[in-house]
Length: 351
Image 1 (cartoon, helix red, strand yellow):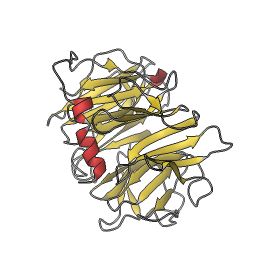
Image 2 (spheres, rainbow, N blue to C red):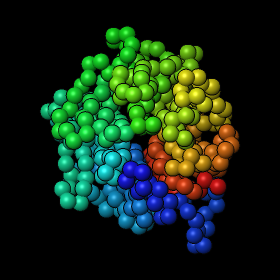
Image 3 (spheres, rainbow, N blue to C red):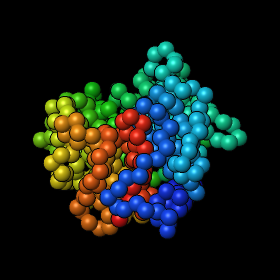
Image 4 (cartoon, rainbow, N blue to C red):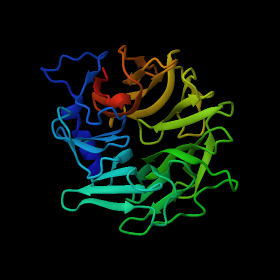
């Protein structure tokens, strides 16, 4: 088992499992000491024995050693725009985004270790991306794959290498129709994603051949969907997939959308959401696949929502609490942490 998976599994002892001191109920969200101030929480990553990280929109990376009771800043620039935090294959922290203190779109992929501190793995000087780092994934062999936050294309760095490639043949499709990848996920040792070319309906992206990382090929999720899909998650390492986002028009009253595939991403069906659910911004599952959580904001600018799916049920239960709009969620066996607008950070329970 990769070290990153071990760390994620161990995190349930601090963030997910109940203790006799916990008074929370499944329909409650306990506020935590949010480190982002008024800035939105954009990413949450949970480690072992109370260790966790939070990324902010223009507020940098912050670490907790006590399961969210307190946080400390980790990066020298407080203008760091964090879009995603993940572990690499060695269990080291990766931060994807840009530094707003730099002129222009300073693409950044940073890695942190106790020995070396912060290392810059990708920047505008590399043969990488033209826009900010949007998403990052680690394939089964340890290769790093990065997508841009605003343009089609990938940057790829092989294991044990220091140079980046922009593979021209990464997309198997018509020239000019390669998608912007809004989410990237590693499953079955390969790379999967969700994206759109802003003209055609959104697609689920998977390797064209199981034995190779690239090229990628797209499968239309819903030919009648006029909207965007932003989030992708799997409870069982790639046999079942869920994707979520929003339908047009892109206003506060637009409805959220959620789709499920039970055959590895070939066929999709729409799943019902509560009528009040607007944009679905993030999806995540616990390591054992028994707890799924979807977050976003309600229609009509009415704050945020949390949907929880426990056990083998296909039904989603809405947590009946008043929350600000939410953007991100991390799930462990038994519990989850959500983050969103106004710097909100909170913990909830799967069942």
